[in-house]
Image (cartoon, rainbow, N blue to C red; front, top):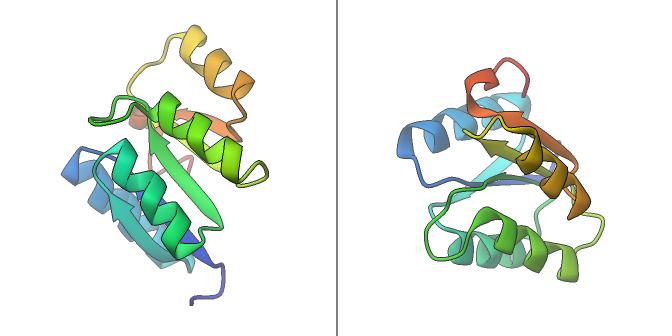
Length: 112
């Protein structure tokens, strides 16, 4: 395991997923990825993630549904929502469900 621990990137867009994987690997994380919400929750479970980046618009299980699953099992796990939605209601909902942060994809990787 790398110095900062395990990061899981749950993102259906391959370009964004690869970008996030590169940024987090360069920062010192061991990175694992998933392309849909259901698989992402399983990767978090199996790899014992220390941090998660999570897209809202995912196939199989939406990001918000995956966040609810993660909160049930890992209430203190930092989950950062990355979304193309900049409307305030999406951020407010994510925070109310326990997200540690909310970034729009146009701010990645600068903010991350």
